[in-house]
Length: 352
Image (tube, rainbow, N blue to C red; front, top):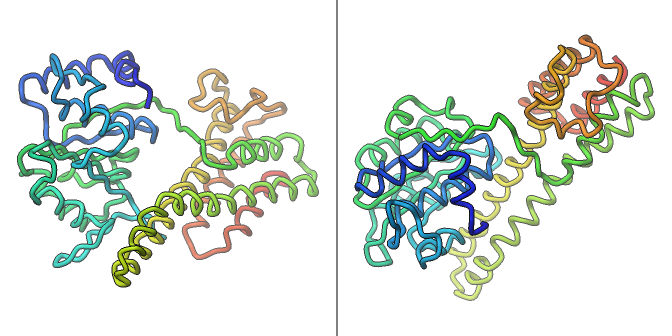
């Protein structure tokens, strides 16, 4: 995180940050926030800033200093009282967990940390639930009491790009912090290849079955590579913990940790897959806007069209591509072969 991160956000959201500074200075900072941002990076960075504002022992006028031990620990996620929860598993959900003996990576295990004696001498505890919209109703209901009556010196942050999926009872217990740009960021592996293939399909491959099949293969490869990339990142993230568990020699603990790592790997893949499918739908949506006469410079994600407005774009083409993208997303909700669905999508665009 750059050292001027706070200043960057102060330029973009001066009123919001000044209000937060004033609340912290007067001891009136809320204990629960709903952080709504359409950028995952913004959700992570602003959660860090918010945790620093609440926890920095050297803050002046409510502003974080950014350089003390606590601020640096929060920045690099080594702060001992900083807890995070993210969706895991094939369904990419935040499960409630066993009520008697909650497992790690579950809501009840996360919540339990705030009712235990702190390990660092009374420092503020900070908990962040990323992709909070992936909590089901049971998980949200289990969190309500902590949101309403949190332990002393506790800060909870629910970060999401889709607050509409949260229950009204959950949202009503949090102070909303909107950081919206109306722009998505697609930085998953294979994003460039996907964008190139989609643009080729609507321009050069129209009526050319061989070229359409070639682009379909490129799209399928980008989808397949997501799993390998997520697995590699997850393996690196869990490697030290698994090696440490093996040295302890407790086979049951090691087995439990391996199961958690596998669950987290599924979650990492589902997150990247979601971005992949979102990029396809956003491409189709913006193509529809262009075909309907919206100026190129008004697009939220113009980078999806590196060559500018596609040539020979008609309203009929824009409508057809959007319909095919929505049909693809609907089809993938069921137990279908993903490669076949992606190939059909690509060929239909070129040949219809």
